Image 1 (tube, helix red, strand yellow):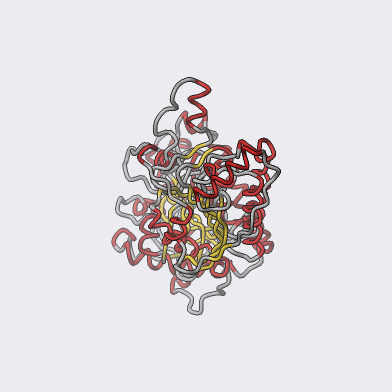
Image 2: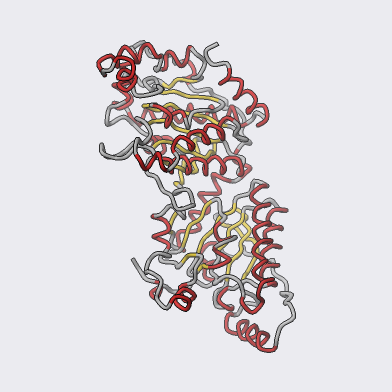
Length: 505
C-alpha cells in the first residue's frame, strides 16, 4: 500500500478539470470577507493567495457532470493547507445553501488540515454551521456526494468531509481525525503507518470506494442517474404489467421447495443485480467502522425505477459465518438513505440464518433485529421486499416488512431452519419435512395468509435458468416499485402496519 509521501496533491483546478464537463463550470465565489487579521496572519494570507492562485482555501460553483448540473465545493490545499477559517466557512455555507435553494445535488472535494489555527475557536466552531447547512441539504432530499482528497484531517474530516450519502476517496489519500504531525509532537513517536490511508478505510467499512480522479465523473454520473429526484418517484405504474402477476404458487410440498432453494447454483442477489438491474452502484459498510460480508447495500435502478437495495449476500464459502449484527447496522444505513433521498427501499431475503456465535450475541444481534423491524414497519419511504431463496429465522424477518412482497416460487420463510424446528419439537431432525409443511413456510401458505403479493415463477428451478429468472424477477420488482412510488408515504405506512396486523385473519 502506498505511503503518504508518495502521493501528489490534487489541486482544486485539476479536480474541476477532471470531473466537470468542459466549459460548464460557473464560479459562485465573491471576494472573501476576512476577519480582523494580525499583521503576520495578513502576510500569510497574501502569500497563500499568490502561491496558490486562489483567493481562499475553497472554490465553489456549479457545472455539468455528464450533462447534469451539480453544485461543487473543492478545497485548495496549497492555500494554508486547505484550512477553514471564517471566510472559507462562509463561502462553504453559502454554496450549500444555494445548492439547496436551487435543488441541486452537491459534490464536495475536501483536502484540508482542518480548522485554521490562526483564527482559533471561532474558526473551529464554524464546523457546526457547515454541518447544519449540509444537514438541511440532505433533509431536503438532495444528494450530497463526497470525494475525500489527500490529505483530509481534523475538523473537516469530522464534519462535512464525512457526511456524504456516498463517500469515496482519492487513492492512497491520508484521511483521519488525527493529524500525524500532531500525534508525533504530543507522544514523541510516529503514528502507525497505513491506518489513515483511504484503502484501509475502505476495508474497515468507513468509505464506499477508492476512486481515481479520472473515474470520478463517471461515478457521479451513474450515482445521479439513480439518485436524481426527478427520476426516483415520478414514474407512474408501468403500462404493460408483467406476466408474473398471473403466477400462482407451486404445487410441490414445502420440503421440496426448501431443497430447491438450497442448491448451490441458485441465483442470488449478486446475479439479480448483474442480470436484472439497469445499473447498480455498490456501497460499503456502515460508515462507522463495520463491514459485514453477510449484507449487500447498493444504489440501483430496475428499468425506470430507482431504489436503495439492501439484502442478504449468499455466502461464497460453506464455512462463512452467518449474518452478524454489523449487517443490520449497515442495513439501517440503507433505510436512512431511502428516507432522506425519497427513494423506494428494496430488501432481498436469502439467508440460512443469522450468525450463532459469542461475537453476534455480544454485538447485540437480537437488538439489531428489533431495531431493523422497528425501522421497516414505520419507514417513511415506499418499500418492496423479495423472498429470493432461503428465509430462516430472525435474520430473514429483519429485512421482510414492506408495502409489497414478491416471492420466488420456491422461496420460504420459517422461524428456524426446519431441521432446528424438528429438533426442538421432536428432539431429532428427522421430522424436518413434516415440520416445514405443518408450519406453513412455503410460498403457497405465505400467499394464502396474505404476506406474499406477487409470485415469480421458476419454471421448475431458478438454478437451471438464472439469467431468465433474474430478468423476470427484475420486471416484477420494477412493476412493484412503480406501484408504491405513486402512493403518499403516510398512506403506505398506515396500510403497511395494517397488513402485518391482519396477517392470517
